[in-house]
Image (tube, rainbow, N blue to C red):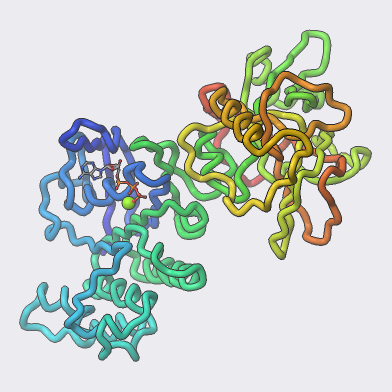
Length: 443
Ligand SMILES: Nc1ncnc2c1ncn2[C@@H]1O[C@H](COP(=O)(O)OP(=O)(O)OP(=O)(O)O)[C@@H](O)[C@H]1O
Ligand SMILES: [Mg+2]
């Protein structure tokens, strides 16, 4: 059995009056694997707990298979929940832990056949006689999963079930969870703040921010057509490059988006998406370039739809199978408030500037952050000095092959593929590709 879960305008207000979930509507189909994704504190667990019946719904309606179920007790919902901290009974063996819900459900029955079948599914047949203290973290989590599965519930609610495990085990169990839930055909709602986990597991991903649903769609849709700048920046690694731009659409010349000292010239005839940008003439926008939208190549080798840009190498981050080159293009990165998915903290030490003390640099940076803008450290050689008060190295990250020989300070030709250009308005809503564009991702 599997089940449809619908939330209609569901809100949660705790006693102090903060609305931690705000009019959330979501229809989860029977057998679907839906991932709730968002930064810490955005309300993911609260949504899951409301579905489970562990938390009251302040406003709105929860429908289970089309029936209003706001007041149904948790035991009547036929759902199994798996938490981050796998609470097993320490005085019971793994087998007894897995069989426990079966014994509660059917006190006279023999849980063993179901326990054995579940253990086989999870590959933990050898662990059934061990106590939790004699198991590793990953093994314990599998037993906890077994306890949730054994009953064959109609839905699984999983709250960051893998976040206590190391990366290798996490990947392994991720694949197992995906396989198991599909085999069982149970509807699954899976909470995580890890976008790569969300993208690899979900049939659809629902992105939340501050209690508000931002977008729900397949992983491809949220990646390729993010509704706003928050979703664009939360989904995908390395993080999308977000630059402040200004649209210039003269009546008698080519339309451009200026990025500080350089500009992107939109090729003519303008595509439909680019024509729609005309109304932004003279306005500040946010330009989004994922790393695959930019490549390092001579300007003369531009393919149709590619336009030139020049970058000054700040540093190169080797990742083994690829390298991420951090360029300075003389543009200003756009700041997305409360975005909790910053670029990796493991940046290499920055090159010392020859002028100014460490304190001066910190002061400059603080000023820039206060002003809501972050400018660049070294300008391209042909760029005139501008009024920006502060400095952070690199405004554009480009992915490339690891064998590339680039060093700090080199000036490098770049090509931007305008087919991959995102433009967001000042409120962060996507305006290019046009919001009305259907998610036809075949092209
Ligand atoms: N019992 C409570 N009383 C008041 N506020 C609460 C309560 N439980 C949670 N909150 C608040 O509700 C908000 C959402 O919490 P929730 O646990 O749903 O976030 P989350 O997205 O699961 O975060 P995380 O990724 O850190 O687990 C948070 O700001 C939290 O402080
Ligand atoms: Mg949580």
